[in-house]
Length: 370
Image (cartoon, rainbow, N blue to C red; front, side, top):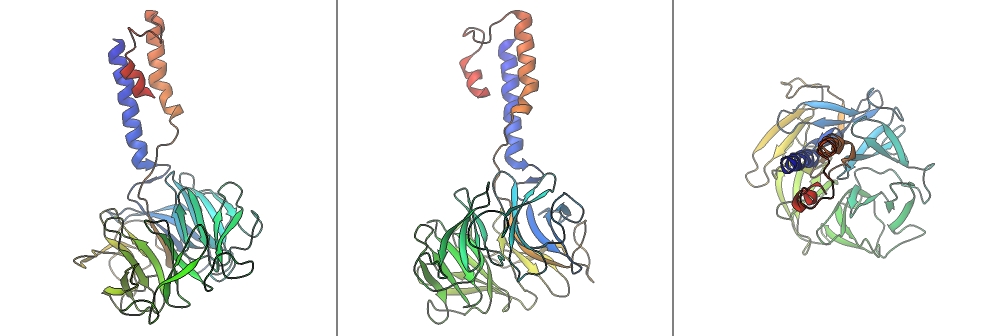
């Protein structure tokens, strides 16, 4: 009886852990998150189902509490379901704040800004936000590590006074982290990609026409990602409407996709390896591109459109940032354990069996509970 009950508890725990590993506080692994805005002012975060294209508001537009009327730009999330966005009060060129969003309630809290946290100003942060080894990295002309409790900003790299690291000035637009923990940024001002050492802050040109690497030059590189399958570096060019791969050793650039329909502000990758960006023919649609075959598919309609609307849910004026939920870790499951453990203790009490009895409580079952 007791052995069967222990197995029941272990099964409950296994099912809970499995569920929490894929679903966490309103989002689940594979979800596409996007920052969206209205021309009349105000932004928010939506969840897009990668299969159906359905759109659900996670925060903003009446969902959740916190600051209102902010314009949302970049977006990232940690593996515990906490969403962070860069936002500004009245436009995309203003000083940014980093907002933390509860993905279950939609509540917004200012994590770091000119009035929250110590350190130099963030600048007008666009897409340059990413998690690195449990630390939130963000910035524009200066790059910071942001304390996720206090909002304090510790300088990582800057050519502006007070400087940190060697190399030229930069204006980070997009940001990602490569396999060696090097920070890679797109700089639309110089039309190139820059690598930043996270320890020293030193900056080095990775790719730029004609100074570093061969191949088609950039006009306005914005989004940048590392292929989670093969390690390739993809960069989206907003003005040229193209997606380019960059060789991190030589700086060589290879154009893999160009379309007059594209104005790819941001770039992401689904769990099955397809690239996603925004198709702006006469509306905004979330477009999936197979990086090998270059087959394309519209996942979801995002803006009021003259074409067939794909996916259910609200529509918006324009989309800025994209993020794919790659992994989630279990939440503390204390409350979830009360039911099966309470049941076990009641039965033990009725049968007057000690919970520590080595004869009645198999070691294997105890290990499975922990």
